[in-house]
Image (tube, rainbow, N blue to C red; front, side, top):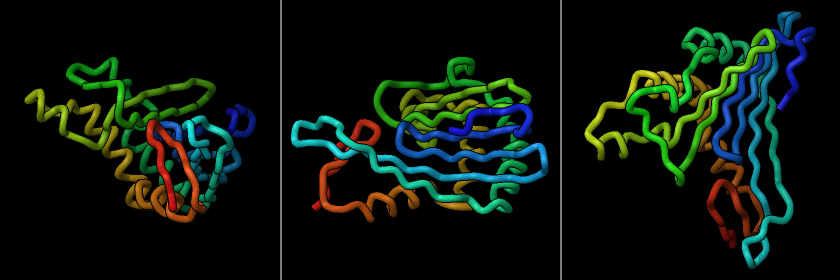
Amino acid sequence: MTEFDSKKHDRIYLVQIEDYQNVELIDFKNGEFSGSLTHSVWTINRKGIRKDSIIQKITIPNSMAEKLISELNNNGFGNLKDCNEVENCISGLDGTTTFFKAIKNGEINTASYWELESDYYYNLDKIKAPAEVIKARKLISIINAEFDLSKQFQDFLNRLPIGRYSFSMQIMKKG
């Protein structure tokens, strides 16, 4: 992740899905924008021990980064509450956690949500997903409208050579 520099940056938005996918969007003080989508997996040996990382970093076009920052900002990215602060927000130990980080004027706001895009546990407990969860889902849908995060990661996995890989809590054998 880019280190925030108050002389250069107006704001930085980061969305991280577990430890394998990051979207970083930067709004510079000079009116320029940049962004990147990064995928990561680790090669593993037969015992499942992580060895080396394989990283793909894709540059997000500046105009798309500008559009995403604007839309995310208009939908409350900078003041998203953490699941721990939200009544009836469900969290767990396994599964996928999505992290949101907004840095503006040196102030950092972080939030995380477990199994963000699934209603399974809310339906199981017969409760409605809280408004803040719906808001976080909206933020992910804004990004997915520009480039589908799941599809992008799957395309990355499909291009890997034959081998054993680890990401999140999963082990994948290819070939």
